[in-house]
Image: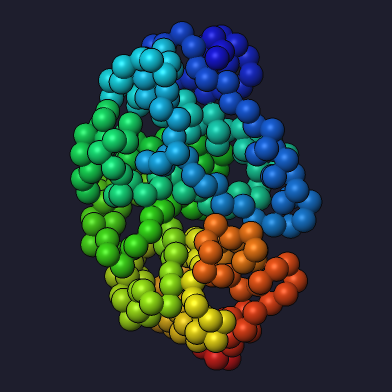
Length: 296
């Protein structure tokens, strides 16, 4: 932990309504190394993720930042959230390598928050008009605005099973953007398998997001299958659907596959385009075919 004065000396952002005497010390070592590597190799970076209903340490929600503390009030948590978001983003864009970060998943999977989540304990049950989610986007937007990056860096709500939640996602983003457009659009995770969802079902959400005027980025694409032949056909059809919606006018600005190769994937059903590094599968070539066939 750091005292507020120590944190300020290190360049941390401390909101004017921050009433506590300490803040957690943030270790930027891994972040800085990754940014430097990407900068030197001409790679873009997604900032993933600032606020997530999962894998957030429990003491972040507690008094004194203590594992034995009780839940803080929403007002205290708002100040903590602003401290964290702005400190992270300020650090990135004040560095020599921050220009590689072209997008942020500001909030991840809020609509799937379990009742045990610290965010739910403090802010209440899941809704399509969550004030704290709007606040998170405002803090991020204020930071990109400060650095003159609102037209260069996009801010996303990221989630999974979007084809089941497209209506609620659109309602929530419209709420976030009421007044000022803080959220550029949707991070469409796209953890798929050949058995589900169907290409038409997947495409229905793309169409809905396009019609809502949202920027779309495919952020965590993988497609599990029992055979390479099955995966290749499915990958072709999914990529063809994405490209056709793009060609029809959708503001699709990025596609990220969720891993380099099957041998290091988080899944066991061989969902990626390479089996191991530098060893492409049939799905790799069929994905390229889909792009070529749509865009000639």
